[in-house]
Image 1 (cartoon, rainbow, N blue to C red):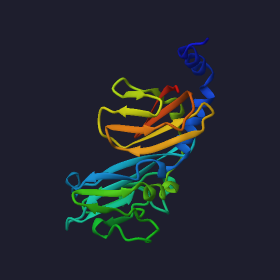
Image 2: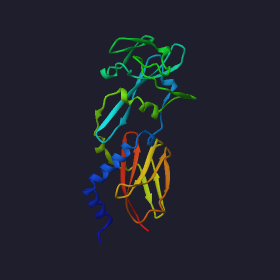
Image 3: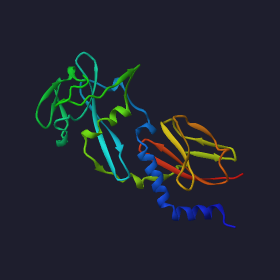
Image 4: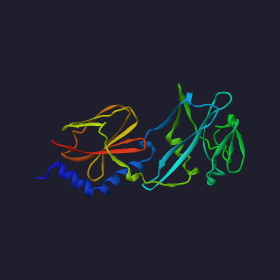
Length: 242
């Protein structure tokens, strides 16, 4: 009789396509399956613009770095905008700050920071990116960021090779009815369980350091658990016995 370790070794040798399918599922599922917003402390923002980017995975080989900036105007109001406009975005040069204005690095047009943030302005103007403020945090929905993907060029992506073994700092215990996962730090994560045909059987989003999943409906066999944390994806093979 083959041991579980033999099954696992054989699976790893023959399972490249399977792992590829899992990564395709994770990265083609879109932003709605990931963290739903980005958060920035208000205290980090000043009248000097800070630039950020969001890595939007299109497929297994293509991505876009969606760039945006956050700045405070002279009255203390927070302004968020894409680092591109509908006229000059093909030049991929973005905006730079000159005093209290943002200057298009392609055509040279300048726009007062205190006028940024009006929806539907279009043209050569930092693209509209809405935000909200809750207590001391600036919140930007990922769905809003992704709407600006067309303003940025596609880039090659090789993240399909980045599936990593689950670190030892993650403690995983499995019994016949329950899977308990203990994580070292609190963070936004998506935990998924797949069968050996790359079918997703369970998916949950959590920022907790300890999670319990009911697996009583799963038959005996080998499964794979993936943990997606920011731009990292960890995996571990698990055996469920009855």
